[in-house]
Image (cartoon, rainbow, N blue to C red; front, side):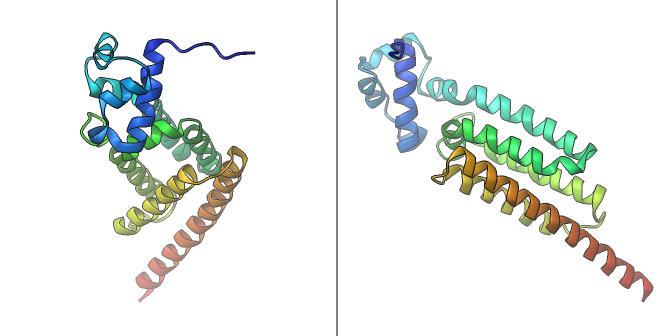
Length: 202
C-alpha cells in the first residue's frame, strides 16, 4: 500500500527537521528548507510566522508531553519508590519514540524560546533526585553528590538516545542500568547512615 502524499505543510516540516538536525536552528536556512520541500522560500509564510515558529512546530508537542511525564514520574516514584526501574523504562520509551524531537530540543534549539528547555528538565531531575535521597536515603546527602549522580543518569539516557540501538536494545539497557542504579542507591544510603551513626557515637 502506497504511503499518502504529504501536504505542503508536512513537506516543510519534514525538510525543516532534516535541516535543523543537521545545522541547528541558528544555522538552519529557510531557503534550503523550502528547496528541500520543493517550494519557494515565500511559501513558508503561508503556514508559519517565521523560522522560529517552524522550529517550535516541530518540538512543541514533545516538550509539553515531556514536562507532563517528568512531573507524573517524580510524584509516582516518591510515592512508590519500587517503581523506579519501570519509570526509567517508560521515560526511555518516550525518548526513543520522539528521538529526533528530543535531539532538536537538546542540541539544536539555541536561539529559540526552547533554548533552555532541556536544562529546565535536567534541573527538575536533579531536584527530584535530591528529594528522593532525603526521603528514602539520607536527609543530609551532599547536594554536589546528588548533582553528579543526576548528571550520570542524564548522560546514560543521552548515550542510549544518540547511539545506534534498536528499540529492544534501548529498553533492555535502560532496565539494566535502572537495576544497577537502584542497587547503588541502596548501598550508598546504607553507607551514609552507617557513617552518620559512627560520627554520632564518637
